Length: 366
Figure 1 (tube, helix red, strand yellow):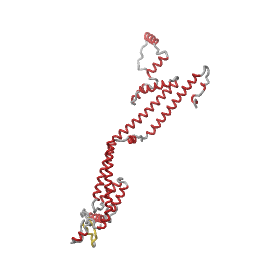
Figure 2 (cartoon, rainbow, N blue to C red):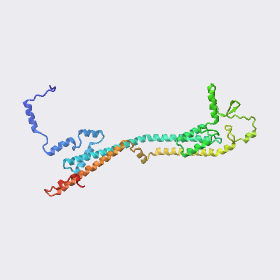
Figure 3 (cartoon, one colour):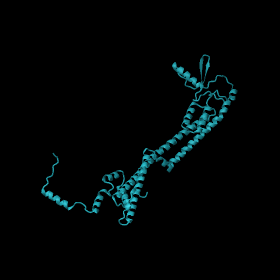
Figure 4 (cartoon, rainbow, N blue to C red):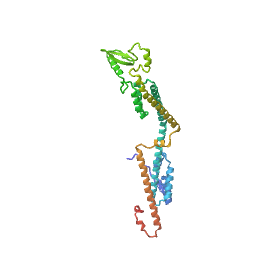
């Protein structure tokens, strides 16, 4: 049983419907039919849903209508097949332009993102160069001491700079010079034999709960069966003559193992190391000033092109879509031109001659 109540049709309503229906059945002529069809589908190219899709994509349907109208005027299709081909050609050209717009939009987005992060990257590089220059300058000041001996702290700092790639090959030379200026008996980690012995003594003292030795130790020497710990600067000889002290003025109480002759031999390596460190400070400052100029001037066109270069996974697919669109445009254009040439040849034939009509269209022109 239907839930919708059917209207009651009386004889009067039926007669009125027949009268109204006889007055108008829509357009009768071909021109009228085409005008009514065009009012709904706009050249028969897209329906209302497609027009909504174009608007949703930020595209103007009027531009697509203008493109189709221009193609219809240029090719003047005469049959259904030619009209379909023209419509298809307009669609392919529109899709190709959409792909171009998507690539340009992606490049614009990349350029804006790169512009936002460019200043931060340049500022970070400038800060790193400034910090590196200060570190090298501090090392250079330390090496400036005539009685300079590579400390464990300076060696660790230089190792880190060398690991970060600072100074390149000059960094390797500086590392070698730092090793040459170590105290005799020091290993590659900058730890002397006395410090190793002090570490052993502190380990033993910690076992028995005795306070470890914190002050620097100049030497640890055995005295009989006991280990005697001498603090830094301790001198066994008492009552040293003033004349002897004047004669050994090039000696440094901190490093009693290094003789005056050895200090003079080390001087050449020390000066060379100081020059290398000072030169690297100047290099860092020059690079920092260059980055500052780059930040003020802005990127060049080549740098922007490198920043917006598509490197995502869809870049190759987009390129293939462009190539496919252009190949289809070429095929459709060739087909339409062949049809037009064929029509011209048919129009030029005498009446009743249909020999050209037996040619296969696809083989024409081959």
